[in-house]
Image 1 (cartoon, rainbow, N blue to C red):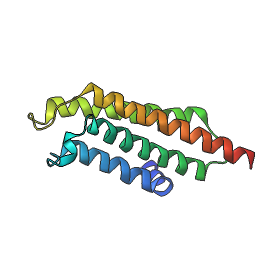
Image 2: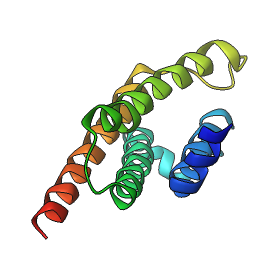
Image 3: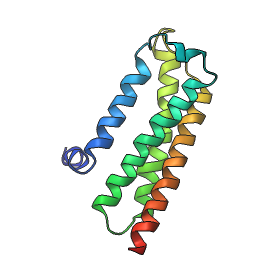
Image 4: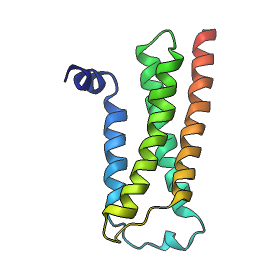
Length: 130
């Protein structure tokens, strides 16, 4: 229980954004004119995960002066990618056909995480120079 309060205190925006991702991945999206744009949903996935993980990196860097590589790799890279895979599996097998699991969505989510990692590393390097 203490760990949950720790996460909420140190990473409040990230926690909210991850909750929003879970919600968005299980509701049925309305039809919009943007549906006609090729691969729009993949761009949305890249943006969701890239934005959320970028915020996670920024919150981590705010609270930690020294980077713990193992913690960052597990918290900001591995965990979101595993979560993405779990969501795709749950969409495929637990939504009664309302949502389909899509491995291209998983790949787009992973690209977002990797882009956020690149941004986080650049910010960490910039901060170290100051």
